[in-house]
Image 1 (spheres, chains in turn purple, blue):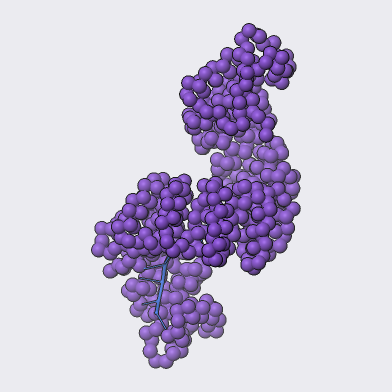
Image 2 (cartoon, rainbow, N blue to C red; image 1 turned 60 degrees about the vertical axis):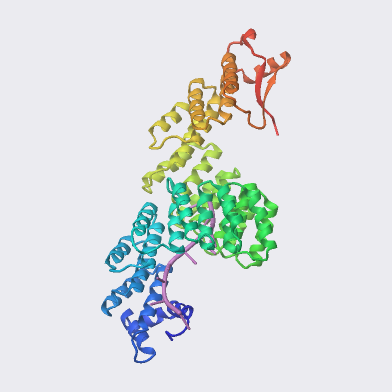
Length: 530
DNA sequence: CTAGGGTTAG
């Protein structure tokens, strides 16, 4: 049987290995009987071992894999390069990267595969830098990288600081070596460029690829959607369907994502019908994309229906649902669902789940609840809150008017406040007319994104709220001096005198002194109502 | 016809 096709052996290994093991009481027995089934020759066992190790990696079967390793040693296959590469792959896929490294360093003469296996292994274990360094080391040897090596090392660049520079450098290398027509390489390059926000480079690469397959299309669609070019993603999907390439679950997942981003409920429903036609309703990736699409499209009940029909629920699905309720303003249902799952012990909440819960509190302005969950996360679950959790809590305090407490938290948290935090803080400063903190927030925002006009306008409102018209004028002068363009929907208006008093009514807090008419500049910022 | 590779979810 070992002379049959490898896919047969693979299938065989997966389906019958377990049975053999239980019958013979040990993996050794199973392997012995496999090697003697087809007669006297013992040689083919190494093919079986190789395929078995591969499937142990794919199914993350750690127990079986290490027994095969032991059997390898016992049968004298320890130095077989093919088996060692398979071992590296197996250990890496079971997240035992140290063991993978150990096998690698035990190899006397390496080949492209052994190098590539460890580079891939480092990359999937989150050690992108390590993968890059190993690749560099490989370049000093006689062994040339091949397409597969490039694929691995490019994937390792994704999410690295300076990943773009590495990626461009690798791209040059790839063109020199003539690997740039390989679709696998093209996909990883498109993915890498798209993840670094270099969508133009990705588009260029995509356009240059002559024989695009499904996955190349999928990568490009996903790249568009990641960079919020959702319409382009949809257009490309239509084009892809015109090419009769077919679609995969990946495609539909990405398209649903684009529909969610655009809140396109109708188109999302059409994709849902495609999911059903393809018989992919059981795919959890699609289920979560559907839940997300329905909740962002405003149909939370259909989102719930998708969840109900999914047989195997996981953290992602539950979190999508909680987030869905939170975002559509049904916060109490979000919290009820979360609490219910906790008591039934159907959910071990992780960071993102707590983000959804805190978002629900934030949406409903439930400060006490928010603090309670925040504390629960740290004390009951021993998690260290990440910046998004702090952002929810800070915004909760700020929107309740406790600006100093919010500012305090921003200082005490172990992260630097990001753009989102400062801008939500600034809006609270506007609501409560806190000039001092508002000015600070606006300064920070302007420093972070000098070309964005929004903080100038909000700051002007903070001043206006306190009748500091000279400061309002100063903001306008600064904007003109710095060549700022107004964001769409905002206008400077010359205010006729009879409207001035009406604006005052709006902005004047009770008990404030009447403004000095002579200092009023007769123009005002206002946001057009869509 | 022994190994290693690309795109998907909160």
